[in-house]
Length: 159
Image (cartoon, rainbow, N blue to C red):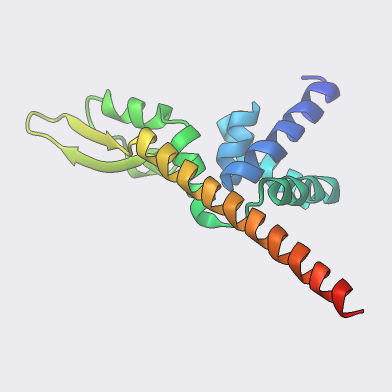
């Protein structure tokens, strides 16, 4: 892999991490292998340029809120590990389960006959809630802009 490819993957990592808030998942989605994802994520997050980029992206997204990050992750996150688990003949060993990204899983059950039933969170509901919250924040931003304008206007009249 060339240095140019690694730089591009690190930039993608910053963007994905700013939205999802999960370093390992962001590294995997940026193109790093699952085995090197945590190390690459840690290296990126130690880099001052990466920290600055993530901070700027979060500010641009107006997102310091864990609820928005969680909803974005439910709506846009990867469910490959959940599907892998659903099609497994038997439950994988605990050390394998620890490595799986199961954020989008709402319920796991063993069914009679040795199978596994996996239920995922509803992406549409997450998108709907995300839409509601985004509109709420947009309305707050408009309202605070109006309040600032009125305050500035009142201060000018006093002078």
